[in-house]
Length: 484
Image (tube, rainbow, N blue to C red; front, side, top):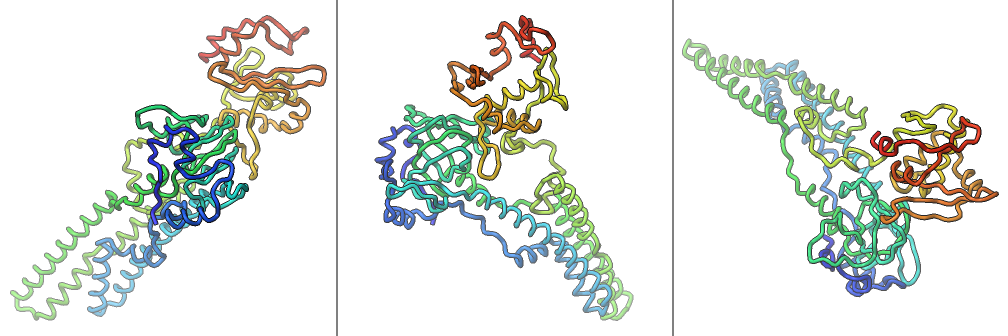
C-alpha cells in the first residue's frame, strides 16, 4: 500500500508546534497509543521505500539471451545441428553460454551489493508511545509518532521539529549542502513554497544528525517522503540501450540481411546451373553458419568484464556490463558534488605554526611545544562525539580537526580529563566564533576557533617557544595570512 501524508508539506513548516501536533492528532508528552499506531499502519502501510521489482536469478540469466546477435547465433547453432555439424553447434552454443555466464555473474554481484547497501539505510528509531520511550524499527513508524533525535541518528522519516537543542543535520546527500544545517522548531511564516533546503524546521528521511538533540513529529512516511519521491522517479525509469548495444543490434540486422541475401543468391544461381535443390539448400545454410561471427559477443563481453574489474578496484559498482562502454563515451558528468561524488569528509590541509605555513605536520609534533599546543587546541575546542560503532559524529570541519589530533596519537579522553571543559561559548551568527574554557588546575585557559583574520584581529601577542619570554608582539599581516 502506498504511503501518503495527512498534511500538505507546504502548510506543515508554516504551522506552529501546537498546530502541527493538533493536525497530526498526537501528543508531545504521551505520543501515540498502540491502538492508534496499528490503525494508522493499516491505513498507510509501512514506512519503507518501495523496491524496484528485483529480477530473480533465472530472469537475470535468461535476460542475457535477448540481444539480436545472440539470437542470430542460436539460430546458426540450430542450423548447424540440422546440417549434421556437431563441432560448429557445440562451439556456437559454448560461446553463447560463456557470454551469458559472464553477463549474469556481473549483474548478479551488483544486485547483491546494492541490496546490501540498502540494508544500511534501515535504522531503528527512538519514539514516544503510551508515554514511554521505546526503540522500534523505522519501518514501523506512522504519521504522528513523536521521535527523539540525537547525534548519530539517521532520520527515519520526514519530521517536523517540535523542540530543538542546537541540533545540526547533514543533508548533503539530499540537498548538496556541504555544511550541517542547524534546525529550528518555530514556524516559518511565508506565503512561498520553500525548497527543502530552506525548510529549517523540517528533517528529511535518510539524512543524519551530526550534533545536538531534538524532539520531532512524523509528518510523512515511505514513498511520500522526499527520499521516497526520488525513489519513485527511479522506479519508473525505462531501460535505455547504450550506444554499444545499439551498434551491435544494428550490426546484427545488417549482417543477417547480407547473409540471407548471399545465401538466396547462391541458392538461385545453383538452381539456374542445374544443381540439385537439396544440395544448394544445404550449401546455402552452411554459408549462413560460416558467415556469422560467433566470437564477437564473447569478445565484447570479455572486454567489458575487464573494464568492470578495473573500475571495481576503484570502488565503482557496475550494475550492467554495457554501462562500462556507455561511461567510456561520456565527455562531461554534471552532478552535485557534496554527498554524491564526495563523502562530505574534510581534511586539514595547511597549518601556520611558529610564523611559518606548512602542509604537513612534523613527525615529532607532540614533542614540540608549539605544535603540541596547536593540536591540543583543535582537540579540545571541539564538540565531536564518538558513536556506538566507533564513528566520529559532528560537524565535518570539527571531525577533520579532531582526526588530525587522533592521527598524531593524542589521547583525547585523557586530555579532556587533564583539561576539563568548564564552559562553552558556542558558535553563533552574531559572534562568529566558538570558544571553550578549560581548567588547568591553577587557573583556566580559553581556546577559540574561527577564520584566521577573525582570530588575529583580537590578538596582540603570539606564543613562541623559540624565545625566552615566550610571548612576543604579533606582527603577522592577518589579511595576507587569510589570502594564503
